[in-house]
Image 1 (tube, rainbow, N blue to C red):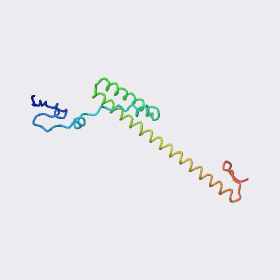
Image 2 (image 1 turned 120 degrees about the horizontal axis):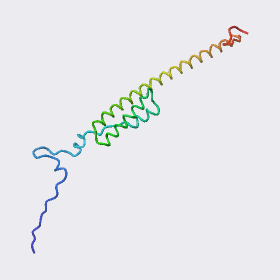
Image 3 (image 1 turned 180 degrees about the horizontal axis):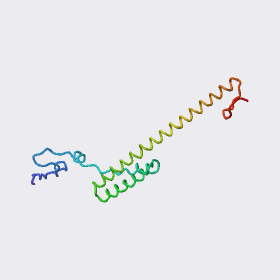
Length: 142
């Protein structure tokens, strides 16, 4: 009975395949981190701006460039997709900023009108407390 054992070499792991001879082995996570991220198309942001914040049709323009960026990404032209995505982001930022400024102006005007109405009401109540009946629409007392 022969007692010699046959030793088979183990299969090499993927880790050993990721380095060149003479260099230190590279971690697979490092390989994933060095790859460039896919271009962003900002389609949801553009759709939101198209529906809610559309001053000067900037939301529509942003949506147009977002769709073009998505089409270029599907076709595999990543450089054109990045360019269109960058334009979409710029138009989205412009549309959002202009909408926020307009909203701030409306809130400021509303606050001014409310403060004027409150001051008129206080003046009217002061006039009633003096015993005089004054009509704010007619000049004089009655």
